[in-house]
View (cartoon, one colour):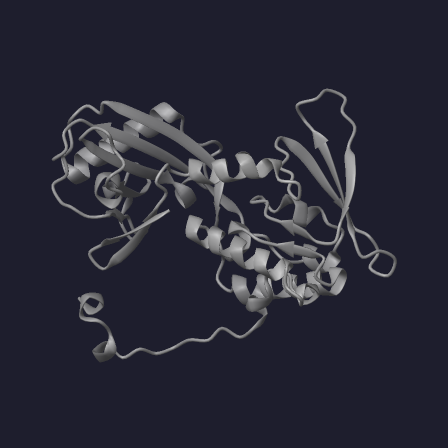
Length: 301
């Protein structure tokens, strides 16, 4: 990972894109004697009575093999990182079922590459489109545009302009199905033409409709949902079942990486039986007041 600065904003980038994470999991560490990575499997967690067993039974079934039997294993600790929250919802815990797990929205991500390196009328990281913008000014229901050529520099082998247009999100909640990839591309080009006066034909495009990819935290999620889930998990499992990921700790890549590092340290620490991954949400949130006169000048401006 490389760190960079864009004016007063710090940026982080993967030198080989998010494939860096993939190679970490499916490269040589996959063969480590104390680590096993299983892909395309169905996982079930059997709740063991706290007064009879201190381990969790995990069953996995390989979906690539027809009629395969489930393999069972015992673990002192299990960490759930599933984004859908399905495993957490399936657990027979009445105290957890009463809490609302936030819904996730679908986002259309459109990447466009133009051969003209001087296509953008302005330089910057990009922009987001607030909900206050009326529909007449945002008929594509876009969320924002990232100027990838400016935000992430030094990765390209040829000159040009790269842009990412994000569509949908909460705007698509009332749709029976999201727009097609072709429709997303047309909407992205229409948006760029109206906002940035870009009329060039893109040399290459890539469109992905990411279904249910970003959890939407409601107001009070920390106090009303995460704190009670922590108490329920701790009472039922005494630290043997922990949770981590975008469903709980933030939806960004940086959030997930930080949460993963924290939960790994917690799981290997001496007080792991008192941790669930959500313990910080059980504490009252502290706020600090910063006087504008004490803020750095570039932040004030």
